Image (cartoon, rainbow, N blue to C red):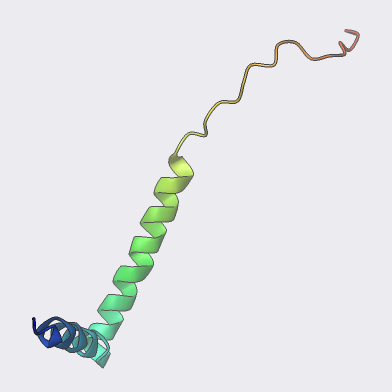
Length: 63
């Protein structure tokens, strides 16, 4: 049998460290910046082109 308490203990210590007041501000700020950068990157992606439809079905008269 393997002892998995070391991994969960490490995660608990990291979570406890990240939620104490001085570090919590930095973790929150890093998360906000990460969300902003990911949404900015997703917004700059070019959409896939649809199939070419050709000319419109009804032509409007030119004036």
